[in-house]
Amino acid sequence: MSEIPKLSLKSLSKNDKEAINILSDALSDHGFFVITDHSIPHYLFDKAYEYSKKFFDLEVPIKIHIPLEKTLVQEVTPHLEKKQRLERLSQI
Figure 1 (cartoon, rainbow, N blue to C red):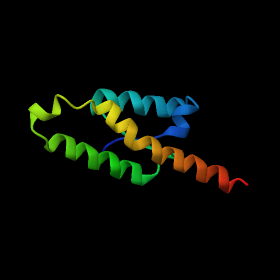
Figure 2 (cartoon, rainbow, N blue to C red):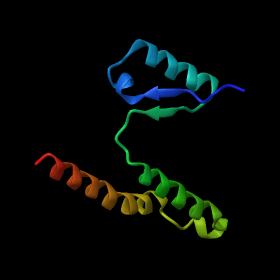
Figure 3 (cartoon, rainbow, N blue to C red):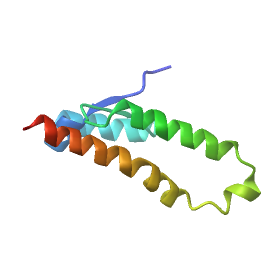
């Protein structure tokens, strides 16, 4: 079994040819990959997994009435805004 491909967001954003090839291979061979070199705080991933589990553990008749996109945006936005405020303060 092969390892999940890892791609640097910095390399991808620079259109690095090797990164683009790795991305192409990852999508055709695996269907997914891991992005590294990003500034997303780990606790947001934990929150996303937490809410995903809560959602998928619900019974289908309940799930079909939940506007998931709106719910996730409402939960994640305050965390992103807090991060941005902290970054601005650290630059002062």
